[in-house]
Amino acid sequence: MEYTVPSSHPRYRSLMEREKLIQGYEKGLVATQGLIAHGRGEAFDYIIGEETIPPAKRALEAAAASLLLAKWPIISVNGNAAALVGEALARLSNRHGIPLEVNIFYRTEERHRRIIEHLRSLGARRVYGDQLVEGVPGLESSRRLVDPRGILRADVVVVLLEDGDRTEALKRMGKRVIAVDLNPLSRTAMNADVTIVDNVTRAVPLLDSLLDQLGKRPKSELERRVEEYDNRRTLGEVLLFIKERLEKLAVELGVTMRE
Ligand code: ATP
Figure 1 (spheres, rainbow, N blue to C red):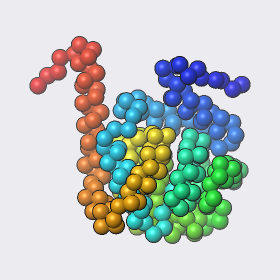
Figure 2 (cartoon, protein in one colour):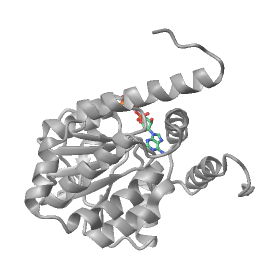
Figure 3 (tube, rainbow, N blue to C red):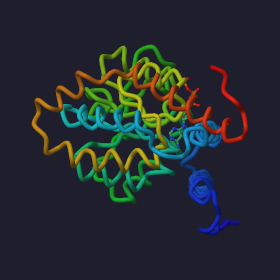
Figure 4 (cartoon, rainbow, N blue to C red):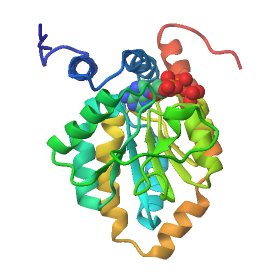
């Protein structure tokens, strides 16, 4: 039975995201494990205050600059991403000419096909993942599969809610990896070139408008932004943001901070 979340509910947004995932699960897009991964993301989102924090904004700018400079950019889409932000991804992909590739961890032919169909039904014009070759060394067989028109030839790959092994494998292939991951401590976050610690539901529309804004800037400025960006430092800033936010909340609860 479908549950309708009242819009007055204080946790409306978060509950709607759950609903989207559950519906995605019922439509065969989301894996059972995807529901668990979402829970971990939610916990981190609660901790950062469910908003795009300043270090994530800087990472988003570096990501947009990298995508604008890329020769063969691609966005790797899994079941959770398709269920949560399928529409926003289709829009970004069409507007900026960045193709999508369906690439999933818990792979079944059926789920893979359904995600491709789902993205196409939302209007995405270039969805790859239906011509797969064994292309990623160092991973077990089904996860080695990539599309020669997409991830295989790409120079910049955006991964949404990815696992650490695959991020590392893509890096070994010489690709520049941009990750959106709410967990700043995950292996994906640590290994990517640009880690956007934000919810995909906020990050994807923001990336879309940043591509518009930065698309008007000269190439030399984009190159400088990419060069000056330091991902380890940005992750450190995320951790400091969390520390300071939690300290502030603790003080509000009556705790006196030690020097
Ligand atoms: P790793 O292998 O990289 O160390 P992991 O084992 O946590 O990480 P998974 O469980 O496969 O990897 O990945 C799910 C990741 O996606 C988690 O880090 C989780 O915080 C993050 N995540 C879940 N939901 C969202 C969301 N809506 N937006 C952004 N990130 C999310």
